[in-house]
Structures are given as C-alpha cells and as structure tokens.
Length: 91
Image 1: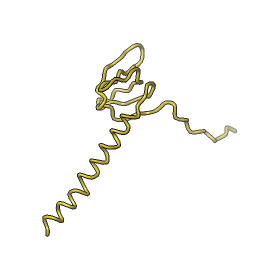
Image 2: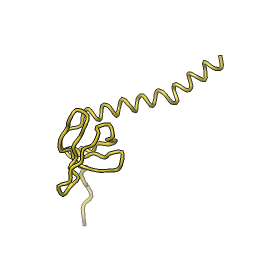
Image 3: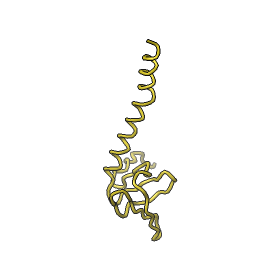
Image 4: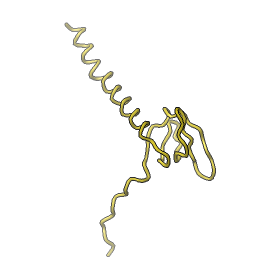
C-alpha cells in the first residue's frame, strides 16, 4: 500500500505539473506570429521576422537577424497588447 501511495504522490507533485507546463509551452509556440517580441532560453530578445516549421528568424535590432530553433523560445511578449492606462493626473 505504501509504494502505491508514493507513486500517486510522485505523479501529482512532479509528473502532472511538468505535463501542464509542456502543454502551455506548446500552445504558446503555436500561437506565435510575425511581429511578436520573444525571449529565448539564452536571454536573447528579438522581434519575429519570419516563422518556419522548426525555426524562427529574429530581428534583434540594427539589422541583426538570428535563426533560432522554435523550442528554445521561453516567452512571447505581444507588442499589440494594449498598454495599461495611466489614470494618475499631474497637479
């Protein structure tokens, strides 16, 4: 009985959360589009210039372009998202 309980605890504490993170990452990668700003696993920040099957071409500014494997992108920061309004008024 104890080994079965340990396996169940192991599943809910380690395996299930990892599967959820992987699913969220795959969804994020599938939703990327040209013009999105992304961050790579190596810390490179760039704007998506072109998307290919397994590669992304990033424009890093000042004419620099990098080919990155799609799976190495860890965050997508969509520039088209509205910025929060600043309601404070200057007196």
